[in-house]
View 1 (cartoon, rainbow, N blue to C red):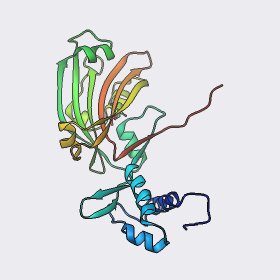
View 2: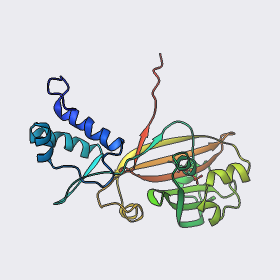
View 3: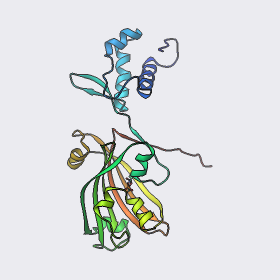
View 4: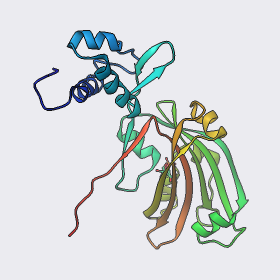
Length: 242
Ligand code: 16G
């Protein structure tokens, strides 16, 4: 499996080999990988080379280190495709995972400037503010704060919000959800994110801002979410346009 006569660098071959073992389940989440010395002896390569491969896999999130204990396999990331406007519930069901929500707060408040401008409302217009931790198979994935115009998405209740906002809008209110504008940026978890996402201080997160529209162009939600960067990755296809 390590081919020393190949022009492909050895650290890279080892990296690919370990990745394969993670993907096919030979190495399981939270399992310890062999030590640098073991890899070096087993494949007759230098410890420096092993270290380079392992460092890269740690940086890419495939492995994590624990001081004094060793290096372990990370849980695999949820791969989120960036085409098609989907809900958290749909995304998780499609993957065979169980979606759930922990409702942190739910109230009607006057829209602040930022929310009002995204939702094309007057400042202080009534909006529902919904704070939810979104979980997949009972593991916290994202902390979401959603603002929804109270005069448009009528009759929201805690029970509805525990389930799917999108299915309520489409199936109960018969409104047509059409498109969204979304931005993603990297950040470091704040106090509330550390607590609700059960992550370590200093962990990276992906901040997503989404404004979504009905088919007539009316904005129906403005959402700020913090996704665990160790559990999520976003993928999309790029088409060359000439
Ligand atoms: C996703 C959306 C969020 C939407 C929610 C509805 C992102 C970044 N956010 O989490 O905008 O409100 O789905 O989910 O993808 P629900 O229908 O399960 O309540």
